[in-house]
Image (tube, rainbow, N blue to C red; front, side, top):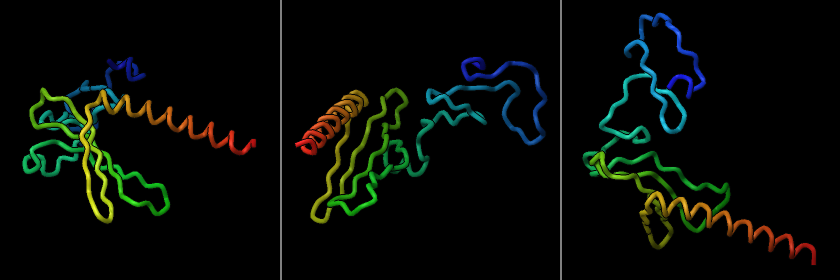
Length: 134
């Protein structure tokens, strides 16, 4: 596993303040390494704040900030039920002046949405460049 992370495996003494066991290396799916033993009761992306109260794990919300005024504030986060066997989902929330809405997508739906949005952006850019030529 160390070679997967681009590291060489050879014995090295640990610093006195290191609490993890010697030789402990874990490569997360993101490609980052664990620096201490993982808390297996939470997914790595969980914000670890109020999971029991909410009844689910939740990542920090990422806001879609366009750097200009918009009609609504949109946020996206990962969520997963507290049972470890469940799959994470993508939560989209929108808060406007008059209403709020939420949408929960499976990872498969979110992946397809990502590609569909890319296609729409491509079509919009093509249409914009066609308008400039005429």
